[in-house]
Length: 237
Image 1 (cartoon, rainbow, N blue to C red):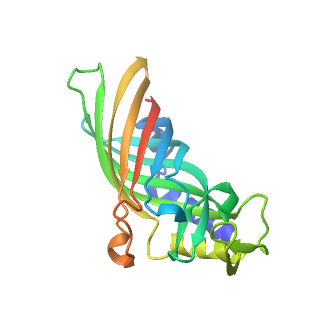
Image 2 (tube, rainbow, N blue to C red):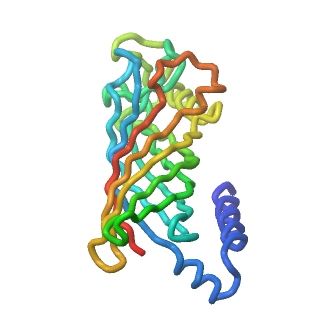
């Protein structure tokens, strides 16, 4: 039932935002630019020896932008990553984990919406992009590979916490989806260089801001929750 409702919602959205005439739809899609990119994501953390070192994750992504003028476009983007997490009961939060201490495998879908300002100081030799907007990190929490939910959960491989791995995984899901911890405004910039007609190569630098810390009430280290991203992209106009 959930999948049917999701499909129905997507169809309703498409009919609501896309022009109903064939010519209108053609004009709409003709104004879009498509991009694909490879990213390296840096998830800052400061948990001492209670978690794995800062995750540095490869990520694939893409986007579509609608051109309003030479200066302005609106873009929707999606970046996908995956890594292992554990729940640290002494900290009362989910933390990155090494494989031997994993309780869950998390797949994150970072969905972004942003206006993009484009500048061409050398005409068509290159384009500078500056943007910022809202992103949602929609994390799916899976059972970690090679481990059973009934196994006893440990914080460091030896000290039993009194919980099972399955219970720890539920805590991870509750943490990530609670208090709006999936909300990440972000800013970024990049450059594109034409290489073929209708094809550009470029790069992106992005910073995600954990604004949920304002209302979550957690006493976290300063850099906890911030993210940086470096990406290389191909744009098709």
